[in-house]
Image 1 (cartoon, helix red, strand yellow):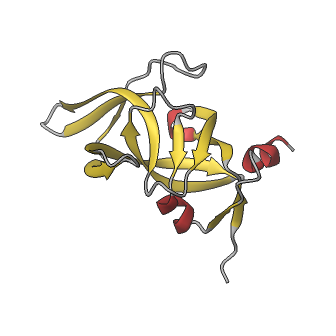
Image 2 (image 1 turned 135 degrees about the vertical axis):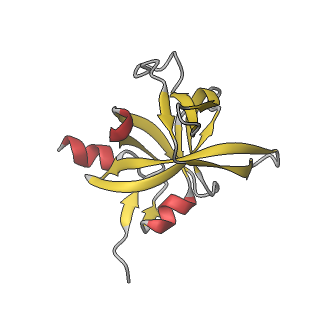
Length: 148
């Protein structure tokens, strides 16, 4: 049997490529993909004609909001269906995330989560890939380990 990492219903995650640390996240086994709150998402053309995705992470009211414009050439678009049955196309980016002191590759859909309590949602695609086991009675297990 593969070694499984125990994670609670909520935790804090680091995104070193964006210089964002201790971001609140919700673990959601009902969601297939992971999502991160963003705004001002648009496609731009770089010199030479390469298409880039431009976006700002988090909400301006968030304590770690930095109004930084992020750009990436590594993205794609996919159709996402919400729990209410509403479908929309979202951009997907790849980055690195730190949980339990380990660096993980992760894909996030760029979503408007302004009305949501947590700016990041970790879905079961990520949880399954890295063999996480979810205990909904626990919270902040990675963050507690980091603080020790």
